[in-house]
Picture 1 (cartoon, chains in turn red, cyan):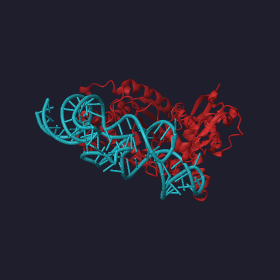
Picture 2 (cartoon, protein in one colour):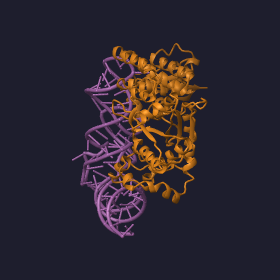
Picture 3 (cartoon, rainbow, N blue to C red):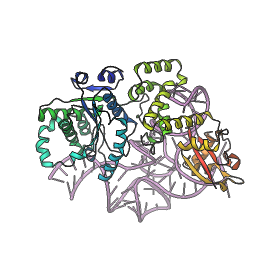
Picture 4 (cartoon, rainbow, N blue to C red):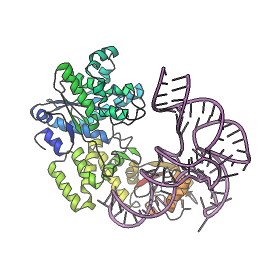
Length: 426
RNA sequence: GGGCAGUUAGCCAAGUGGCCAAAGGCGACUGACUGUAAAUCAGUUGGGGACACCCCUUCGGAGGUUCGAAUCCUUCACUGCCCA
C-alpha cells in the first residue's frame, strides 16, 4: 500500500480527473468524502462497486466516507451519460430501491471504527423538504443558464432532436445542493464519482464557493471499459448484480473468471485490495502461463468473497470445478444437488421419463434451455446439446430413467457452459 | 390547436401491390480452433409439423380496396420536429 491515498488510487489507474489541490488535500488532511449512488434498480451492480470500493480505500487511509443513496435525486433522473430522457420511477419504487441498495452500501464500509466511521445517508431526507421558490432564490440564483448549458450532460442532449426536459436539466442543481448540504452538515469537502459526474461535481464545488466562500473538491474515476468494446458488467443474461437473488454467487464468480485477458490486470487494480507486488506477480503469470489463468482466478475469488462471503465462494468454486471437469457420474445425490444449486433448475415428474422417455426436444423447451422446439432441434443438430455432459447426436433422442443420475437428476448443457438441472419429482 | 415526418423482427435499417417469414448491419446462439480468454472461420437466428417439404402467425391498432397488401385507401393510437 502506498503511504498516501492519492498515490494509491493513482497507481491503480482509477483517477480520470481531479480538481487542483486534491493530491495535497488527501495527503495533509483527514478528509470527509462522499460518493452518491442512484437508486435506479433494487440492487447495485458490479459497475457501482468501483467508486464504492474506492470509498473504502479512502477510509483505510483515514479519511471519512459518506455513501449517499439518491432517494431524492432519483426522483429527478441524472441526464449525465444518458443519450435520452428516462422514464421516471414511482416514488414507491425509489423508496424500495433505496432501502435495498442502502444495505449493500453498508456492506463495504466500516461504521465501527472510532476515528473515521462511515456514514450512510439518503438525500431524500433533505431534498424532498425543499420549497421550490426558496430553492430558486437561494440556489438557482447562483447558476447561470449559460453555465448549465455548457455542461456536457446538457450539451450533448441539446444536440439531439428530442432535447432534455426541464426536470433533468435541473438535476445538477439538486446534486450541487447535496454537496452543499453535506459540506455544512459533515464538513464534507470532496466528492467522487464516475467521470460522467464531473459536471455535477464541479457545479457543487462552485456552489459551495459562492454560497459559503468555502473550498470543496472533486475527483472522478475512469469509466470501466472492456477491451472488446462492449459494456462492462453485462452478460447474456443481463446485468451482474450484487444481490445473490438476482445474480447467483456462481454466476458472479463466473463473470469475473471469464474476464478478457487484456482487462484482468486492470480489474485487479480497480476492484481488489491486492498489493502492487501481488498484482505485478500476476502480470508475470499472465504473460508466461496464460492458460493457467491465475489472475482471473484471483480476481474471481477476491470479488466473490468480498460480496458473497467465504461459504458462497467455496460453493461457487466447487460448482465450477465439477461443471467444467466433466465427471458427473461419480457424484452422489447430495453433491449434485449442492453443486447445481447455483444453476438454473426445473422439475419434471418422474413418470414422464418412464418407458420410452421424454423427447429431448420437449425437455429442452420445458426446462427453458431452448425457447422453442425449432431452436431446440437446431441446437441438437449443431452439436450443442449435452445430456449429463455427453453430446447428443440424435435429434429424436428421448430422455428416460436410465439417464437419471442417482435416479433423481438429469443435467442438460447447451454449448460450453450453460447448464440446467432437471430434478425428478415423485 | 395547426403543419410536417415517422411507427418493419432483440436493436438499427431496407423494402412502397405478387418472386416477402421480409435485404443488410449489429447483437445473440451453436460448432471448429482453444485456456471456461481473445481473434478467426463456418452455420443458425418468428412458431409448428410426418422437418431438404408443408402449414400458421408477423411489418403500430382497427376497418376497407384487390384474385393477392409490409406496400394502396379510411380511421384511431403513439413518437419526434416545427409553428401557435
